[in-house]
Length: 328
Figure 1 (cartoon, helix red, strand yellow):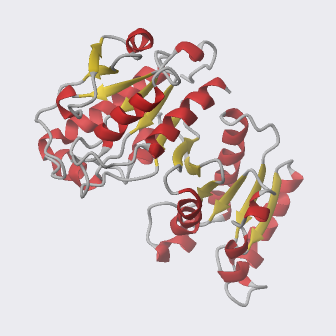
Figure 2 (tube, rainbow, N blue to C red):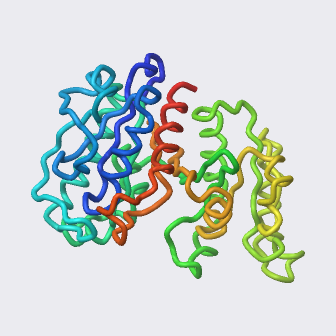
């Protein structure tokens, strides 16, 4: 079932709690304090894991969040096996983290919520505690959506960028990066820019894999052997594409003005520029799902959890972007 956007303006964004021993509960609670009255939201998790200085109220349904959310963080209660010790994940809580994500997906797909914003998880804790079988959030969400082909976009006001390959070793990138794979990434990115960002004719810049985009085959053959031909074919199909470009010249201000999103060939080629340009405001968006999902572009930060110093800006921006996408 694909979520319809009709009537979503009065539906809250739901936040899955993420790893309770990390900064997720803290940044979610502080984001509510910053966004009350701007973005309707509800947090799914165990109230014991929330910071004590932020008021919360238990609600029965996401629809209750609109009335409750001005004075306290609305909480859809989901009891966990244990409390939370800051910085020390408890394997007993792993299944609860996984179940909260699934509950959030159900709420969005049913139309009870407008979008899902996920707080960071700790993959090792989930594997150790519950045998979590997925490399990360994105892959699990794709499975919950019935095996959708998805891509990860990092987005801020300054840049939207998609890594064509994600959580794999660098020496595996050339094996995974096939013409069929890159074509699918381009297709999903273009569709997401149209449907979720409201860009009718998205301009997409494609990075090369090799230094200087291969420099005519002297520094790698992928660009000359098939990437240029694929881009040319897809331009003939109506896609507004450019590239393959040398990645080191794609991310300065003048270059960014010429595209709506960039597609990089591997993880760090995509994440270094956006984290350099807009570290605190970057948002992770999953394109290709039949619902809206965003997340802050940071991890569990066990080293500062529970100290009251975690910066909620990325969570704030993730919630704003999710709600804005639901209106587009």
